[in-house]
Image 1 (tube, one colour):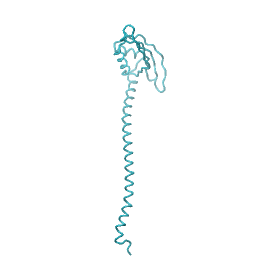
Image 2: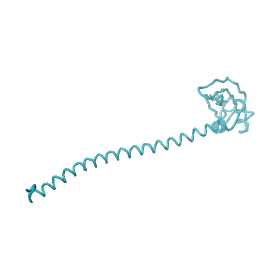
Image 3: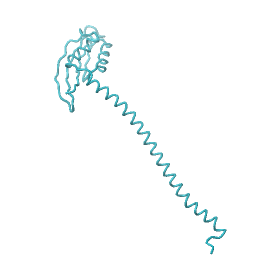
Image 4: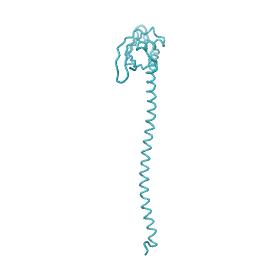
Length: 166
């Protein structure tokens, strides 16, 4: 009893191979799509990782500022900034505006400082020192007017806040 004849063997082989090859092509196409989606997810995660590391670095800098130096208040912080620049004589007043508690472990102490006859370079240096201070300082508001005596000089009023841990 013969199941296959000589002429039907090649046809059976072709049918068997087609039954095996077609699913392989379908699986290959699905695998390529999956690889493409995984590659796009990987690049997205790499971008998120770099963004996370830069944000973590910024947070670490801020956390160092809260733990490194202990300032006795906003007035002392303003005084140290102005005296380090050598313009203490141009500081006319520092008025405390009070303090408030912020959500979490922080308090904010605000003060208004008035400077008279300050050059633009000195003002830029003040802003730089506020940003690079060893404590967390923030300029809430700043107003500038030209001085009556010399139009190249400025009279500046700034509201500055000092953030400290409770």
